[in-house]
Length: 169
Image 1: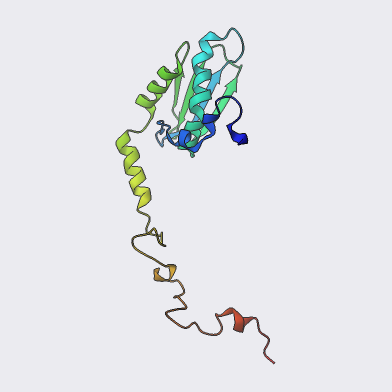
Image 2 (image 1 turned 90 degrees about the vertical axis):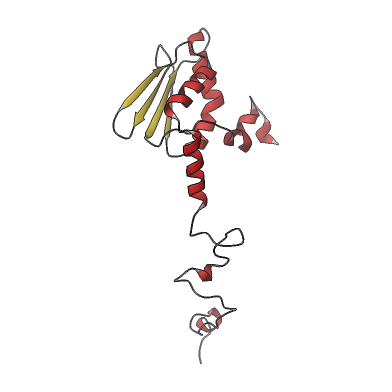
């Protein structure tokens, strides 16, 4: 399996991406991550590890949030959050470990577990779904405005394809 090669291939599995615990609040539109890479950058180690281990999960769990990483542009590692009302929050992550950064972001900028569960149950109750997995409608013909099943009602000849495409002599 070619996707299981490289550094920490577990990061590319669906189970790892789905296990992420960081569901950012919907007010957060953009998150920027500023850090340096290279030798002698020990104060940036926590930010670098956070990006390596938790950024894929953040991207997967927050599809409507933009994430921007800036490498080797700042003397100190900084995370910035831009909100929909125009405000900005700057977090200095200098000399913090990836676990400390993760717990701080989870406690201050993420949704609670109750909010996440409510959103998941709200998404499950979609009235437009039909088919074998749906509780309400087994076929699309049961939705108002759709063509009825040809097994229940005989369709008029002008709707059926075999009459439409044959040439009348």
